[in-house]
Image 1 (cartoon, rainbow, N blue to C red):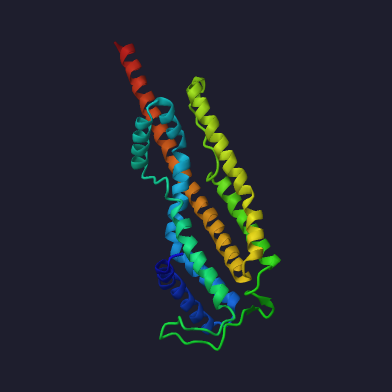
Image 2 (image 1 turned 90 degrees about the horizontal axis):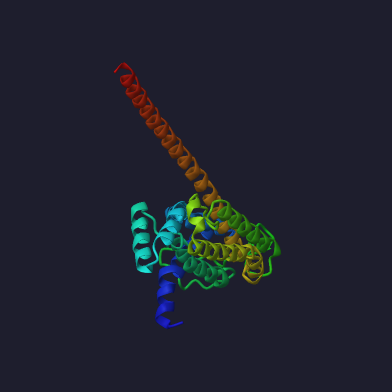
Length: 287
């Protein structure tokens, strides 16, 4: 990695996180509690992006039938792209909206990994800001017996894998990894449409199968990382899954309310139409 990139990364992410880490440790001299507080702080900071990401996933799921209809109606790929972008604009949907929080968290995760790798147990504090007091050292022992500087913690790796599994299940049940179904039965006779659907189903199925292996991958990676990083991974993934479930529940409630309003509106229109028909019939009888 070029030196200027390393220096930039250190100044923008590593040094601030390290200083926050030391400040928290000065207040509560337990590395595990510091990691917990730091995780919650990062999640609160990223909550607006997380919320937008989850809403973007749901919006993409909702417009899948319309996207499929566009692909079936137009053979010209340029026309398909144009209509797709118009639909995105109309529905205020960004196809890459769900990726932004992940992209932002990756450098934060790397910076925290470096902090826990190099900072836990260290007595070198040359990167501290002038207004931050330096402790004698950072004790890696949490709760009296868990060494968060060492790797190979089976319990924390297992918790990280379990939280990853919950997050995967939450995304699948919420439609984030599902295959959208359409009610357009008339398109079933179109061979190209069937071919496109089959390809999409295969792609989504492959993605779903890959996600099923993520907890196993998480477990083995967690064993190789310092226990403090595995603890952060567990807490971060757990809170993300909880946020996803909460926001999905709220979104379903709002969608349900909107659907009821639409149903009432349709019933009202049908009632008005029925009344008009009855008036016309009565007028004809009188004549």
